[in-house]
Length: 321
Image (tube, rainbow, N blue to C red; front, side):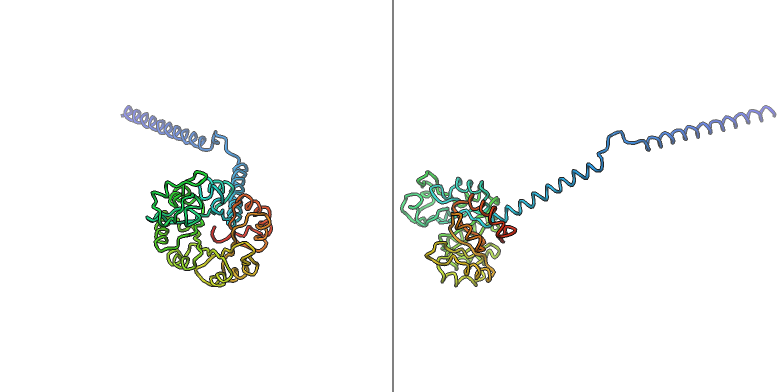
């Protein structure tokens, strides 16, 4: 009997020792885990002050870039590159590229149409001025026009080729030389096909053309090419005209401060064509002209930056931006 009790006590004691060993092991594991959790990460952390400094520098650089972009856009909004640049290279990629390289964002295209309905970029309705070929574009097939070359050896660009090259990278200031219904429909189709309605300022010497286009493109700025005071007085209150651009020469007598004020009073922009000298450009800036056509984009943009910013204040951004 005593033997049985003694054996039972030893078993109990061994069980207690085993339990204690398990508890000790558990405590050891817990202490080791806690020690690892509290141990600092071995990788060197980036100082918080340095992180803040980098962030502030990046934010300042982004703000400065945005401010510069806004200023450049405001300055460029006043300058329309006339035919890219008039002369032997007018209405060529070479002329357009040179104007863009100088900082232009607004390039003019004069648009005519061939007998089979293809739109081309040419200043005159007759091909003779650019190519020496005496014929009205409306009676010349696109096959023939594509073969014509200027004195400088340039081809006559299709408007679609211009759209293909520049897409939405520039703003197009398009004058419809041909105001026929056929040409208007071809223009509308091309604009819609390329999705460029928001990148075009359309211009015409016929107010009725702008009125028609206003129905389809109410948000597309419409510029009336004005030759005399009578036409100015006619369109100044017309809602479908957004910009009145007047001829600069003295003979017409319409490049005046009073006409500029009248246009502004009517809620319109006032422009002028074509001015190329420093005196002419400064006169336009002093008068408060909103935009002007020039053959010397580089000179105009330099004057706008050096002189126009002081006169206009913030660069005088216009609604076409």
